[in-house]
Structures are given as C-alpha cells and as structure tokens.
Image (cartoon, rainbow, N blue to C red):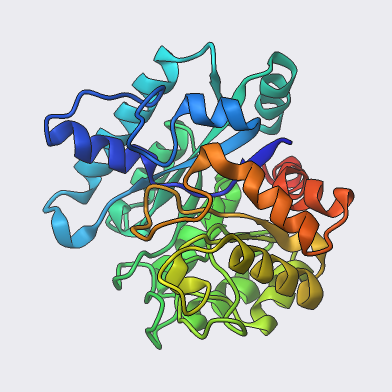
Length: 312
C-alpha cells in the first residue's frame, strides 16, 4: 500500500539529535519515527519533510531555517537511491516510476521569513513548496491557533506571492480568523497539512466542520494528525481514533479532502502503530471500520497525489 504523508518534523529532530552528539542520518535513524528505510519498507510514495523552527528558541530564525534546509538537501542527495526530492508533479511521477520515495520540502513557521518576500522566494528556490503561515506564535503574517487575530497586511502579501510562485499555503496552526481570511483571499487550493476534527476533539488546533467543508469546496486537503491530544481523551495515539477522525472528515466534507498528516517526529506521545514502519496497522483498522479498498487508497495516497497534480 502506498502512503503519502503531508507533515513530519524529522529534519528538525535529526538536527537536534546531531547537535546532541548522536551519529545518525535520514536513511537509518532508528530512534526517529521516520527514516528512509522505514518509509521504503512500508511502501511510502511520498513524504513531506517540514523545516520546523521554534521562534522562542532562536535569535536567528532565518539562519536556523537555512541550516535545516542544508541538512535536508545534503541528506536527500546522499540517499538518491531511495529518495527523489520533488519540486513539481512531474518529479512525483518520476519517483513513482523509479520506485523511489518522493520528498516534498515544506516550512513550518512563516515567521522565519521575518516578513521579507525575498526570503520567501529564497525558500522556494531551495525547493520549499508549502509553508505554514504561523506556528504557535503571532508573527508578521498572522495570529496563531487560539488567537483572535487574523491575517495581517503582510500575510495577504505573502499569500499572493506564494500563489504567484507556486508555494502552497498551509493553514494548520493558523487562527480561526486567519483560516477564514485565507479562504476568502486565496485563488488556488490550500492545505491543512496536520489538523484533525474539532467536532470530535474540541482543540483549537483542529478544524471545525465548517472549515472542513470550506477547505473541500476550495479543492483543498486536510491531513489527519496522529497526536493523541488532537484525537481524544487517551494519552496514547490510538489507531482507532485516527480512523475515527478520517471517517468524520469523509462524512462532513467528502472523501477527497481526507489525507494523512502524521506529525511524526513532532509528537511526544506513545503511538499504537509505533512509527512509519507500522502503517499496515492503520490500513487494517480502516478495513475494520468499513472503509472500502478504494477509500483506503484515496486517503492513504491518491488524494495527496491529485492535490499535488493540481497545485505543483
């Protein structure tokens, strides 16, 4: 079964562990949720790799994101037998023909650009094809989840430029007002790369049913987040809860909007399925929940493939 995952923090985790003195790489870092060998073993067709920068933990966010970008580039170049960095849909198709994992570079925290459109363009030249406008802090673009602040003037500028150069806006972590501002202003489909359903778990990081329907109406996509706090009451990420959120998304907004947004290597809870090597447990749970083979294919990879065909 192919899989396509819209979000992981593996590059940032790899960087942290190397700074702590560990010797590991993207190919076989066994203590991470994701490495290339685990992805290959599970049949992944595509993995988005986010460059995550915590603005509260750096005095130089722009330098930090460039450091992470260099790590991503060097690791994918060193492992071209397994992975093909994708900047366009034709690259995704090439990876599939060659039996490789397509990797799409994304950035989690629009504040790394410091409000400078030239920095945004530089990220695009480095290969970034998706950007979350905020993480958990207010920045030059908007307010984050839990804030009443929507897009600022600079946020609208960034949105327009992203659509012009071919970078997908990601509304995960954005405030509710910011979501609706993007929905009104965007001319192209956008994504919520790793957000689950607020109707099932009333967390500010999750999407309301109205948001899910609006995202679907705009040709967008939502990746179900595997983090336990976004799924239910359990402190363990239960596979049945992940599937429950998938089913709710499908029921309220249609099958085409539902995708995977694991947040692997960015979540600190235990997971029943373990890591990327255990994704067969997810498909078995989907079968038990009544998803058809066609629906499982759509959610696990085909919806993302279609979305990128339309946006990359």
